[in-house]
Structure formats: C-alpha cells, structure tokens
Length: 354
Image 1 (tube, one colour):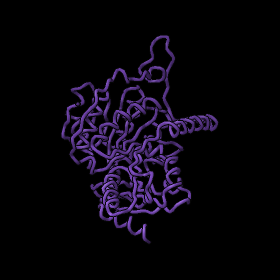
Image 2 (cartoon, helix red, strand yellow; image 1 turned 180 degrees about the vertical axis):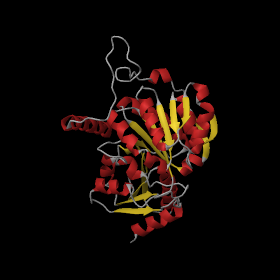
Image 3 (cartoon, helix red, strand yellow; image 1 turned 90 degrees about the vertical axis):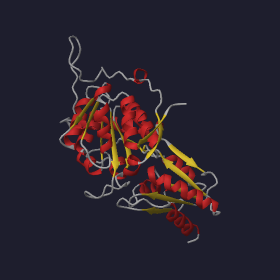
C-alpha cells in the first residue's frame, strides 16, 4: 500500500504536480490558494522545475503561454478574482492549442468577495470565461486525494488534446487536511513528444515553428474554430467522468459537484434512513458534462435536486439535459456559505411532499 501523508488540499496538489513532471510554475499569491505557491517555492526548484512568482495574474498566465509553447509541463494557480484577470491569456492558449494545467481555488464573490469557499465560477469555467468559442476540460475534485489525483489526469489530458485543463476546486478543499497517497507515476512513460510543434529553438534542417492565436483572414480563423469544435466534440464523446450512488431505484436524484457533493452525500444518507429514496450523481468532469447519463436517469427518477454553492449555475446544464421531462429543483448557498446536510434533507422532504 502506498504511504499516506496528512496534507492540505493545496499542498497535495502541489506535491502531485512535482511528481507529475511539472517544469514551469508561474503564479501570484491570493487566498485561499497561497499554500500552493508556498509549497512550490520551497520544493520545485530543488526537484527539476522552475518556480517564478509573477508580478500579477496577467503576467503569470502569459508566462504560462510562453512556457507551454516549449512543450514542457506548465501550470499556474489562483483564486476567483485572479482567474478573471487571466481570461485573455487562457483564450490565447486555447486558440494556440497549448497544453497546460490551470487551478482555480474558488472563493465567494462577486467582486473581491470573501476568502470563504464557493462554486460561483462554474459558468466562467465551463462556458469559456474569456472571448471566443473555446472550452477547457474542467475537473472538479471532491476530496484532498482527488486534488492530487486530478493533477496527473489533468496533465495527461492536456498533453493528449493540446489544450488547457482546469482543476476547479474551492477554498474548503484547498485548506482541509486529509490523508493522501501518491501513485508511482512514471514521468518518462507518460511523456508526450511535442517536438513537431514546440518552439525549442530552430535546428539546422528543421522547419520553423510558429505559435500564434492571430489569424487575419476570416476563413482561416473559421477553419481553426471548426477544428477546435471537432476536438471538443471528441472530448464530449470520450472523456466524460462522473460518480453515481443509489441512482437506479431513486425517486429523487441529487446532482452536485465538488464540496457540495460531499454535503449532499451525507444528506442522501440521512434522507434514505428517514424512508426517502434518494440517489446522487456527482459530475467529475464539468466539461465534458455527463449530459447523456442525466438524460437516462430522468427516464426513471421522479425529480432531480441540484445542490450548489452558488445561485444555480450547473442547474442550467441539468435542466437542459432533462429538457422538461421531470421537475428539476434547486438548493444553493452563496457568498462563501457551505450548505448543511440538514438543510438539504429539509429541501428533499419539501419537494417530495409539496
């Protein structure tokens, strides 16, 4: 059995990044993700990588753009206001088809908001927070172990599809401490050869590599958009991930991700002990979204309840999937407040017996 360590979520993510072959980290401190920078500033330079604290989030994401262009494993992390500042660079990276790992440890907003945990950046993450028709693969961990595990998955998916991958977590998961183990990850075995496009210095007899997101001719830009949409369609068909519990015979199915899913899981157990028939769907990939599974579930369930730490953002994607077949209810807390299992149980009882 792998050795277990008691670590904060932010620290586990940082350690996993080093073990996954991180070569370039560029970031700027912001609560509640600053432990990521602290950990990497101490350990990355001594273990084969480069840590650089940028002067701002704008500088950090453009450093990621440049580093990713060399084909090495590159990463940044931030929290909600900082991620907003990065959106222009994220759009450039998506268009240029560069692999990198982004981390948003979400805090309550809008505005400067609070340092407490939130899920209010869902729209920004899955709909494309910057300009243009682009998407990122979005992974939503639900534990400290998944904070680490999704780093390996994120880097591998970024290399496979040549695109930014976002780990969308929150301040509670970033700060909580849980036992975590790290797999024996073979960096060389999982290494992808990017030499056919990466800018690593033109060698004699080799063609020049140019990385850009600027294409003046509209027809050329449309061709790139068509190519990107084909890639996103392939991802939707092949990379959907989700967890289900007690769904097959449930009357009410809760849909929740990340920290909200942990709370919803406990609420489901309490409700089932009280005689209700409740199941849980936890989307792990927010893009690609488990639309087909939610459609299939709506054939048997009587109602769905979406639980989020926002005003109802994933709610829209669930309702689009269900398409009016069954009622889709919502329970959410905002501004950094974490819902309690008892609140969700009361909501379940109220929608069972309106």
